[in-house]
Amino acid sequence: MDGRLTPLEFPVVAPPRPGEALAIAPGVWWLRMPLPFALDHINLWLLEDGPGWAIVDTGYATAETKGLWEQILTERLRLLPVTRVIVTHYHPDHIGLADWLTRRCQVPLWITEKEWLYARVMSQGADDLSPVRRSFARSAGLDETASEIFEHRQNSYRRGVPSVPPSFQRLQDGTAVEIGGRGWRVVVGEGHAPELACFYCAETGVLIAGDQVLPKISPNISVQAHEPDDDPLAATCRRWSSCGQRSRRTRWFCRHTTFRSSGCMPESRASPRTTRRAAMRLSPPARCRRARCNWCRFCFGAASIRIRWVLRLVNRLLTSIT
Image (cartoon, rainbow, N blue to C red; front, side, top):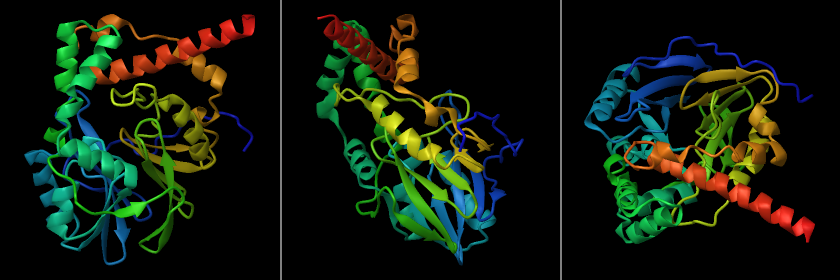
């Protein structure tokens, strides 16, 4: 790999309609499910698995999405059995219907341990975190009213994930998984989620990236109220290199679309200097001052990261002077 950047290719022009499945690689089918947000869809995947199908990610728990899954299971999968449900990470649009699907199909959930633990805790209620969220918002400059709104918005997880399977098959970084006679390897990402599982198939040159890599924007990477001193941006940069090593002639499947890279992914070559430069572009605080928009918690957490980088730069500068 010579490090040169090349334009991304988007081989599929039109995504599948809700309830339809589109074959886009050997043994890989693309689904799209609706979301009740401004970001109104999520991409999911079906992998041919011998006499049946493996599901990768499940969608947000709504009656509409359940109905679309019933349609897919009975019509598109031709009543062939589901062999397993695989979830990349704990966010509601990815794990929301995992418990319902595993019970309906009587199959195990495959997921990394941290993502399962996060989902279990959040789905069973985290009301004791409310004071922590309020304090986190206040410490970052939101007023009392906005901090209260921020606190309650963060309690919405259970709407999208009413339950999580009580047991799971553990995935880890480097885990080899055979699906449909093809070898897939788990590549763990961090930053966007604590232990996000990407899946890479060398035979077909396919990487199912979850939200770890996106074609046009950076994934949301935020400081969380329950871990205010965390540095998820540094963790993301470390993991980008793992994805970047697989970027030549790789087809990337993520939440927005599918695309192909014939060179080095830009994110995989991000240096600490360019990352810090980007981090210093602070988001306008007016965008989330009222804390009422759907994107509040994302903008707020991302801004916290940028502030952290600025403070580190200032600290290093002062240290070098003294």
